[in-house]
Image 1 (tube, rainbow, N blue to C red):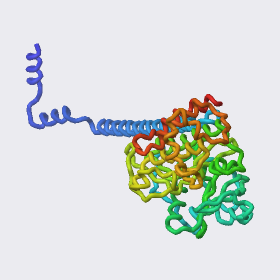
Image 2 (tube, one colour):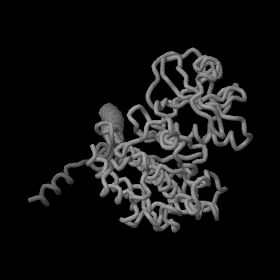
Image 3 (cartoon, rainbow, N blue to C red):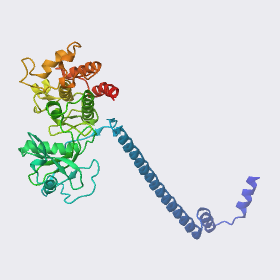
Image 4 (spheres, one colour):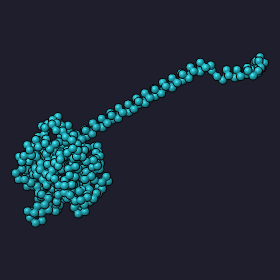
Amino acid sequence: METGTTGVAAAAAPAGPLHSHTLNYHHSHYPPSQHHAILSSTSILIIIISGISVIVLVLIFLIMAILRRIKSAKTRSTSFKDNGCVNNNSCRFSSHHTITFTSSPDVRGGCLYGSNLGHKSPRKHGVVQVFTYKELEVATDGFSETKVIGRGAYGVVYKGILADGTVAAIKMLHRQGKQGERAFRIEVDLLSRLHSPYLVELLGYCADQHHRLLIFEFMSNGALQNLLHHKQSQPLDWGTRLQIALDCARALEFLHEHTIPAVIHRDFKCSNILLDENFHAKVSDFGFAKMGSEKINGQISTRVMGTAGYLAPEYASTGMLTTKSDVYSYGMVLLQLLTGRIPVDTKRPPGEHVLVSWALPRLTNREKVGEMVDPALRGLYSRKDLIQVAAIAAMCVQPEPDYRPLMTDVVQSLIPLVKNLS
């Protein structure tokens, strides 16, 4: 049937080349007006699809940005809660802090990063301000002798009132060449990056011309050194000593195990431990601090700096510094809290000049450990707690650094003792 139809159509069609050409044209092309209409529709469709695609992509990027901000806000909130105090007594740190010493304060126009002369707005927590020498001169009544609250090898500390009413400790550093300048820059750089309830807060600094000053939060009860060893001071009770020991352990735990790389204080001692109105301790004076190795207990070689009697033996003899060097210094502070003695005292009888040598045989002897306790405590302490604290001190001052504990372990050992007392 199909074959017959085809044959009839072929027979009915007139022959000739012109007809053949016309037939081929109509089978292979649309009329011009229809062709342009189709092209126009296609172009519009492509444009519409492209526009929709761009809008979708923009929306996706906006959604991603919003999600990132929400995640970042949650992270900051969690970090704040983790770093915040619980009952104003203890804090936990779960996030690591990455810091470097590559960027140091830069002197521009006579003062680091300019000035805030006349600035009286409330100070934001954690923000390090820049002061002029004139502002600090006003705050201390012209650096009056009546405002002096401390003197050290590297400067004089004044009590001052800043323009916004904040009471502060203002430390004027002696000009000591490159070493003094380096210590100033390290302390500003470090304390403007790290914030912990167990480190004395840096409120601001000044590098106006040749002047170098550091402005810290005011610690009303001063240095532990004075409260332990000055007879005119009220003796610290057992509970307060344990709380101070825990606060100091938390400070070193934060520096060693919650910063990357670790920060080694290198001059941890009683005069660098300050106490607030509630006798909670905070660590100060980071001019000698060093960045540790990123390896666990990794060593770094450096010039020996610090205070005699607090230096770990391996660091004093070789200059090889690790976080365990700070642990030894912490052990010496713990011995002072237990005994009320200073690390080296030539006024003592022979055999008792060096505190660690005299104390070590007694720390692990339950019969003799009571002989070394500070008489100012008058026996008002738990013998069980004493034995535990003595054991911690004995581990911290071990001659071999590998035998010394991590500060996290020290913290976990002291927490139950302090909780039981409270």
